[in-house]
Length: 107
Image 1 (spheres, rainbow, N blue to C red):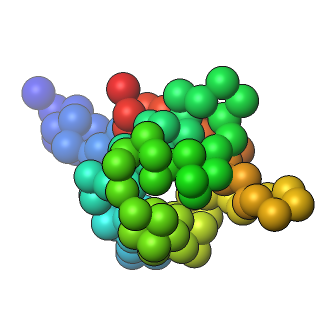
Image 2: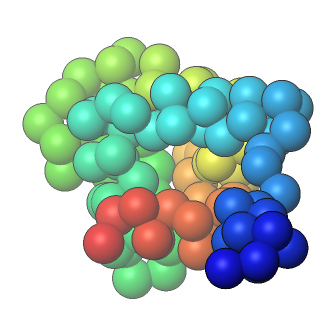
């Protein structure tokens, strides 16, 4: 094997992650590395219209609303969930730009 063939074989197909991209991915993984948050996302993704309320999540997971609200805040702050006020309720949906990644994780 020639030297150029060895170098070509040793070079990764894709460039390694830069620090900023690695930190972004690590942040998302930390946010999603919680069983309650994964269950919440599963309930939302599995709902007929992709929307639920905090009350829906609390009932589905048998958790208190303050617990759900705490986790919703974390998911909203990270951009995984969107809040949409509707009258006296707030509908929660998975952010469109995160939906395919969340679905991949939940499979």
